[in-house]
Image (cartoon, rainbow, N blue to C red; front, side, top):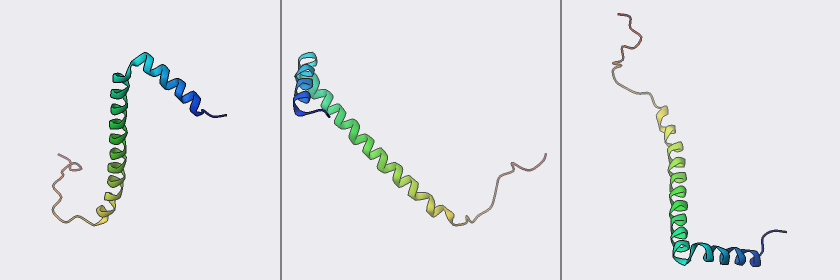
Length: 71
């Protein structure tokens, strides 16, 4: 009861009539670029989630913040 090949062909023909072949080509290329950008953003997000594990080590140095001091 899903969408079959015949229904997809009908939708494609109607889209070609409405938009034309040049516009459909541009839409397909833009859609491909968007999907590629989305996938790379997902990979970057996964890499960022793995990075905080290295932050468990204590920091060495002098604390210079005076936020809690009273004047």
